[in-house]
Structure formats: structure tokens, C-alpha cells
Figure (cartoon, rainbow, N blue to C red):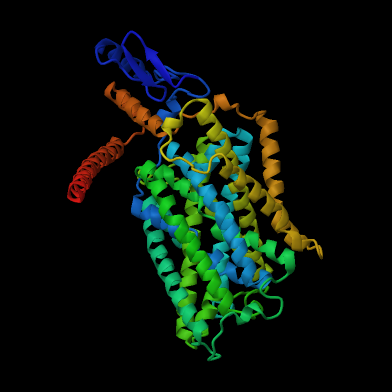
Length: 607
């Protein structure tokens, strides 16, 4: 399919993504506007109609879209701290107890490398199509409806369970101070859940500002923890002696449990790194996503990896893997709290435990936001009941999808019967496997997206390019699948039914959803040349705004739930960005002239 369309009569060349009007023909412009004013039209005047370039429909014109209210400051902080939660603060203790100090360093590094490749693949697609459906929508568009449907429900379930697991973690942490008889853990979870719902239902700003504040606290605490950990290892501890690598030589350390113990830490690491992929979910509510998302990926990921590796290293040298409390049926203690406890100050340990609890609240806040947007997008795209796509006209928050996601959090109240420790471990495994399935699907989507871009000749449309193409996405797919298959090794000897289901039930659910949708809708793999590379792109949004204005000018606006001030603000932001780019370009040109002058002057001086 040709990338450009020639209009001989007007003597101009236009890109497929945008229908240009000849400047000399006012009559044709009036005719186009008149055709757009008919609200019953199905194509709304689009000149192109093909699977790869579908028309803008009336349903799209009437849709209340989410508000782009998240700036660069908040997005970078969300990306940096959205993944720093109970997986690091609490899950690292379980991983240390079952795998050993060196095993967790290796497994977290491997998972971190896979997540990095996933993020840059996702960044390429998110900047091209900045929609709140994120990678679930990518799989639907670039692979097939069945794969997108099963992945969407898988990830929506993932986020809902994440909220439950983080609220369960708060119950575990509460036991550091009081027993169940004094204050029941389920009551704290109920208070936290009510607070999160009230914050998120107000506006996306409510979620963003809460996450920003909690993120600052978490990042500051990790930096402080690393410093304290070094001091503790140097001798300021309850043993009054230099620790060094003493705990790497006791018992089975540094590799505990052999191969099975090592691979079991993959699911814990995947749970910990979960949330990085949800950066693309914010693309639908981000101002200027083509600039913000690539900058966030470049600046943030390596900091996340450094935080994780440095913190895990400190835990491994300061805490023995067999310390009581790292893993038990009814409770667990954060290794971060245990390191502070070695200072001999209960006040410092209590402060650390409070920070870890705030991280559980932050992680639940992040999961509730992401799950809500996934459910909303499924409803908009016909993969879930339509009522779940209801959006508040004042705050633009998908409140029905949010309440649906929050309702699954009732799982956390089952801790009274199962035990907080066992329930949290089970939920953690479910979320970890779900994250791995998501990464594999993102890699597959990236492979087909790249082939479609090349096939349809749209390489120049890419705002951010994945430098690892074509090998990077294949590493993501193969690596994710291998982790899913081997990480349950320890549950076979001896065979443990509960652990087996926690490791592998997600695969069965994904397969059932995939086959069910395929049989019901009779969907097929989308041919590369028919992959839609127009809908929901930046150019599509510009065309959509222009056509809405045409409708409103022709007195059809009362049928469109459009808030023009929002669109004007967005266009003002784009204009301001262009002005800043022009100013930056002028400044760069002056610098280049100055450097050239200095270079010539130095040559003259040398001669």
C-alpha cells in the first residue's frame, strides 16, 4: 500500500494519515464540511476506507475520551516508583529465604533485562498509538482479537489481584506492631480500600498526586536504606562486628534450594518488576506522550534496576537467609525492617515498617488505576459489557470500571481463614505469572508491529524507535515463556497442589479465554498488510478533533459530548511545544555557529 496519495488536480502530495484540502478550492472545503455535518453518516467524510486505514466513525465522534491531565513530572515519578512496592519491600524476604542471596541477584538481573527490552518495545508502540488501552490494545490490533481479548482480561485480573495482594501485605505489616486481637488486619485493608476509591473517583489528578507523594517517600527511603545497610555491614549492628559476606557462607548459601530454589525466585522478581508495562496505560492521559514516554523510558528504567540490585545486595549481606520471620504461614517481616532493627533502635525499625506499609498503599493505588483503565478500554472496544465504559462527564474518570476492579479486592479479606503469609504468597505468584504472560504478548505485538510498519512503508511515522529490533522482542517472548515453564520446578518434588495452581493456573485461564473468543467470534490472525496503523494514533486524534469542530460549526454539536476547552488546551499545549522546539532549535543553531567560529579561530591560532 502506497504511503502517499497523489492528487494531480491540486498538485499536492498528502500522507495517508491526513486528508489535506487544496488551498485553492474553497468549494470543495465547503462540500466536505457539509458532508461532515450529517451525524448519521458512517464514514464522516473520510476518503480512505481499508482495514489498514479505517474511517472515523460516528461512535468515535460521540465517545467521551479520557482527559490528558498527566504531565512529565508526574509520569516520570510514577514510572520510577510505580514498580517499587511490596515486591521489593516484602517479597524480597521470601525470595531470600527460598533462593539465597546470590540467586536473587541473578534472577532479578535477568528479569530486569527482559523488562527493559519490553519497555523500549512498548515505548515504540505507545508513542505511535498513545491510547489508554496500552499493550492490550496493541495485541488486539497487531496480533488478533482473541489474543487481545485474553490478554486484556488477564491483565485486568492481574491488577485487581494486585490490589488484593497489596492490601493483604498491609495486614502482614500491621502485625509488627499489634496482634489480630487488638486490631484486625481486615479492618485496615477496608480503610485503605475506601481511601483509594475516594481518591481515584475524584479525578486522575487525585491518583497522580497521591502516587507522586508516596513515590518521593519510597525513593528517599531506599537511598537512606542503602546507606544504613552499608553502616550495619561495617559493624554498627547488634553483633558489634564486621559482617562482610558472612551470610553468604552459612548453610546452603549463597544458592539455597538448588536449581528449583533459584528458578522459583523468577516469579517473585516478575511480581516486583510488575507495573513497568503499565507506563503505556498512562499514555492515554499523558500530555504530549510522544515526548514524555521516550524520555521517561530513557531516564527511569536504569534507576529502577540500580535501586533493586543495590537494595537486594544490601539485604543479602546484612540478613541471613534462614532468619526467622522472613517467611511463615501467618505473617512475614520486611527485610528492610530487619536491617533497621539491627541498629538496635526499635523506633527506626518502626519507621521503616511504616514506610513499607505506605509502599503497599502506593502499589495498590497504582494497580487500581491501571486495572480501571484496562477494563474501561475493553468496554470501549467491545471486549467487555458496555456499561463498564461509563465515564464521568465532569472528572472524566471511568468510575464503573474502577468499582468493578476494586470489588475483586475482597480476596484480601480471606486472610482470616487462610493466613496472611500463605494468601499473600499465592496472590504474588498469580500476579508474577500474569506479568510474564503480558511481557510475552508485548514482545509478540512488537514483532508484528515492526513487520507492519515496514510492509506499509510507515517507518518515518515512528516517533521513538526500538533500537533492539528485530532481535529484542524475540528475546522477550522466549525469555518470558521459559520463566513461566521452569519457575514451578520446586512444586513437583514433592508435588504441592496449592503451589502448582499458583504457578500454572494463569496459563490455563489465558488459553480458555483465547479459545473461547476464537470459537465465538471466529477471529483470525490479522494479515500484516491489513494491520490498522491509523486508529488512535496522534494523527487520528488530530483528525478527530478537526471533524468534531466541523460538526459543531454546522450545529450538530449538541449530539456530541465534546468539551471544546479540553481540546483547545491540548492544541495550545502542542502549539507551545512547537514554539519551545523552535526556540531550542534557534539556540542550538547559535551554539553551532559559536563552536564553528571557535574551531576556525583555533585553526588560525595554530597556524
